[in-house]
Image (tube, rainbow, N blue to C red; front, side, top):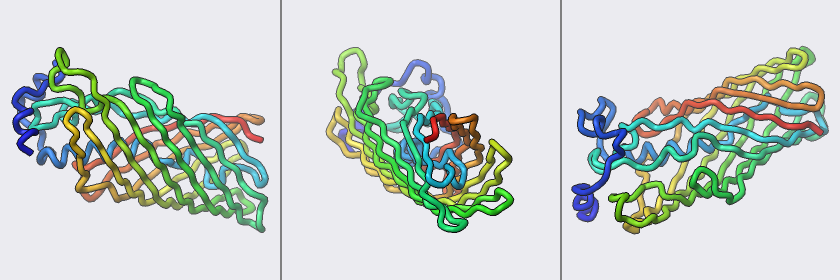
Length: 276
């Protein structure tokens, strides 16, 4: 704590955030711990394995492979300010998360369909960050003669990021020191949708839990998340197909109805692939 207080006297603020840092804190601002917990929760939620597919993603006995693109909304200056609003963190590095993913739906059991999916981001440096993200899902769906689909799914994600996230106190003289962030999320969703020939709109409602670990390389400090996210999530999307091409898009929300100052996310995600 003494080291943090001493360091805050010479911490650096992004010039683009200087006016914001000099002004009054917004009404939702509580303290550094809340700010820290929000940042940790935000980036764990940015990598959740949301559906981006119909309640039953494929025809029985078939699957698809493709690429997901998830928007990572840039954080405002107020959200980036730490150490009593005297320093800005380098959080807006990656505007989008590309994740290869695939699903497979097993042969039907009556009207029921069992499916599984996986996603993986290899340790390739992109936007100045090196990430490893492994995700998976299992689901059980039911489909009526009229094209209505209902399903329940369980999903999980394990991820780690190595990058200069906390940022130097003095960019002119301090060396680049990498930080380590690890996050894990898991949750359950209930889904419903209706097939209209080659288009199937859907909605998903669920609960997701997030856990995080953040090691700050500059001063060898572990930043504890005292209020990890556990709350509702929702998806509103549509899946379609053109011959063997499969595409989907959704709006995704993790609103944290308990206390939004401790972490929330509103974003958009798309997916495109080839069925087999």
